Amino acid sequence: MNDPVEHEHNYTSAKYRTPDGAPADIVIFTITSTDRHAAMKSLPLRELQILLIQRKQWPYEGQWALPGGFSKESETIHDSAKRELMEETGIADVHIEYFNVYSTPGRDPRGWIISHAYFALVNEAFLEKRKAADDAADVRLFPIEEALSMDLAFDHRVIVQDALAQIRMKMLTTTIAKQFLPEEFTISELYQVIQTVVPEFEERNFIRKITSTQSRKGIIEEAKDHSGQPKMSNRYSQRAAQLYRFTDIVPQLSIYS
Amino acid sequence: MNDPVEHEHNYTSAKYRTPDGAPADIVIFTITSTDRHAAMKSLPLRELQILLIQRKQWPYEGQWALPGGFSKESETIHDSAKRELMEETGIADVHIEYFNVYSTPGRDPRGWIISHAYFALVNEAFLEKRKAADDAADVRLFPIEEALSMDLAFDHRVIVQDALAQIRMKMLTTTIAKQFLPEEFTISELYQVIQTVVPEFEERNFIRKITSTQSRKGIIEEAKDHSGQPKMSNRYSQRAAQLYRFTDIVPQLSIYS
DNA sequence: TGAATAGTGTCTATTAGACAATATGGC
DNA sequence: GCCATATTGTCTAATAGACACTATTCA
Image 1 (tube, rainbow over the protein chains, first blue to last red):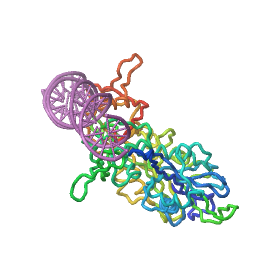
Image 2 (cartoon, each protein chain N blue to C red):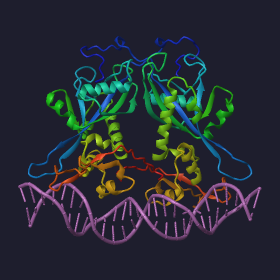
Image 3 (cartoon, each protein chain N blue to C red):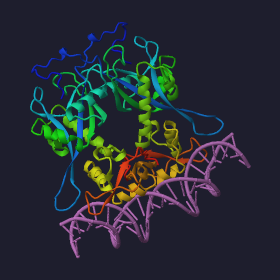
């Protein structure tokens, strides 16, 4: 039970050692697109990146760290994470999800600090303005592999590793791919986004599975214009491709059926 | 970043309001079995239950609550949860899993207390002794539906609801069913356990799917005795049933393939 | 023999998986 | 006509889904 005091009736927290802080740290993922060549229309190169901040003070001064901040008594940790994300990226309404708590003794030299880790998925389209604003600053996107090879502050490397494992799993079992895509997208784009996060993903008959398999075709639907005609895109190819959008259907998975 | 201080070099946590505690609360699930009648061998009635504790002091004195306790600076919250579970059930090596944090302001009248919620899955076989010991005491198992209809302490009803949703999902997507089963079990037992946690689960050709479908048959294997003969059980039926055991295979699910 | 669980046969429709083939339209 | 992406055809094997049917053994 939640009792630090076992045999007293007046509870006073001051008698006990209490945590020195309960911050939220956020692993902000985005997928950047780079055009391959202007010669001909082709699919862009995509790369999974995370946002890091260079610390300006003790501890770990000068090292790169996850964005985050201490939560306040007047808010939930979730709200604190959303607030911090808003401050860092300038955008609200982002997919943000809690995934773990980090409390190893000594993980923070400032004291007993219990960190609550979130991951956020941000469409690169929303990061454009910010990128222009402080490109030279102490906030930068790093390719995930590079971030994992760096000597990050605190236990942030472990947090990033866990976050990556988490979004890899969720990428395949939920529809979070939509966070990295425009409202309407082509099958190739979707396929590419999945592969960017989960490189080993391969599905030769992908288009068929997702469009004509009874159990799966519900998760996306064809985009149509006002007159009911199918909307196409020829942004990546000469031959126009059908545009799709995610529906609200949440697929139920089971290892037993 | 993890900085409560923005423009100072000497960090002193005492300047800030800090949490009054970071407890772990545990939703301990078990499945009880009750024989239906002694007349003939038949499958037992199974029921999903959770363990609750009646509080002896303020706040919420007299009300039922989840077991749990404050974590210490010298341990991780996970260790704290395991310790508490050990104290409550007397058993180590139990499946215990973190699933969420609860930090709504005012959720605990004792102050700013951030609760970390775990669920544990305990085989009823391990709870037998404890049941005998303090059956009349302030620790009891409640059927999950009953627990959810009670006026539990703190925000524990919400925590229990979230835990239930969580294990329902995990029951279908992972092999946690094994926690509720003996080492070797029949297909009917497995089916019954799944249905006890997820009542809407129905799979008419269950035995076939799990034993002869290429993609699924790896998760369980036939139990064999020392001479290599298949092990059978006639505990629930006249006709003996094949015994199975879980393998270490962790099935990978995907909505895209 | 009937009760209660265990397991197989059978049939149709759908899906998986692998490749080949064709479609489109700018360069 | 070539290139790069988009999409369909085709064939075999495996799986899904629904039900009927057989098997086992004790009371």
